[in-house]
Length: 249
Image 1 (tube, rainbow, N blue to C red):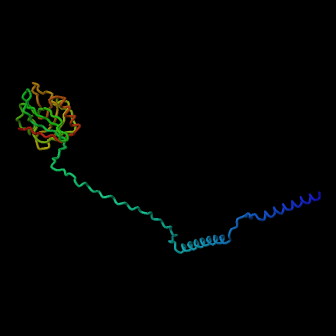
Image 2: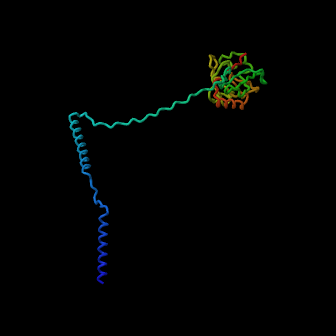
Image 3: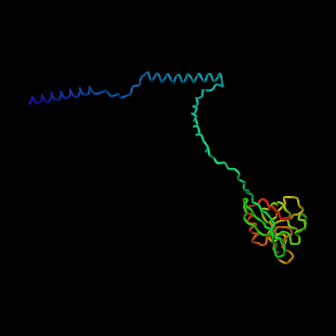
C-alpha cells in the first residue's frame, strides 16, 4: 500500500516538472507595442522645424508685406504630337471636261408670232413657258385687236399689241378692274422705255365673239380659263424672271 502511494506521488512530481519546463520554452507575448525612442524624437524634431519655419515666414512678412508664400509648381500636361497625314495622290488619268455649252437655268416666258388668226381675223401669238431652260408648255394668245395691229405700239391708248422687249412679271395676281379683263390680272412691267402702261396677262372673255371686244387693248389674253389657270400655276411654282416679247413685224 505504501509502495503504491509513493509511486503515485512520484508520478505527479514528474508531471509537474514537465509542465513547468514546457511553459519556459514558449515565446513571450508582448502586451504592449514598444515605440523606439529614436522615432519619437525624430517626429518631435520635424514638428519643431516646421513651426520654426512658419514663425520665420511670419516675421519676414511683417517686414515685407508683399512677400508671398511659395506656390506649388503646376505640372505641364504632355502635348500629343499629331501624326502626319497620308499623302493624297490624285488619279493621273483624270478626264478633262471641255467644249460643253452651258445650259440656261433661267425660268422665263417668251411671246412669238404664228401664221394663224382666229375666226375674226385677229392674229394668234404663242406664249411659251420655260423652266430651267426647258420648254414646259405653249399656249395660243391674242394681243390687241384685228383692227389695231398696225398702230403705234408705244403709244398709250392705241390698243395695239404690246411692244417688243423684256418685261418683269409680277409674283401674283390682282383683281380685274373691268369685265373684259376677267376676274384676275397678272401685271407685267416693261424693262425698257415706252409710253405703254397697265399691261398684263389675263383671260379674254370675248375671244372669237362678235361683240366688238374680241382681243385685248394690248395685254396678253389667253383664249380660255383653263389655259390662264395653268399659266398662273406656272408663275406661282417657278417665279419666272422675265417675259421676252418678239412679235413686231
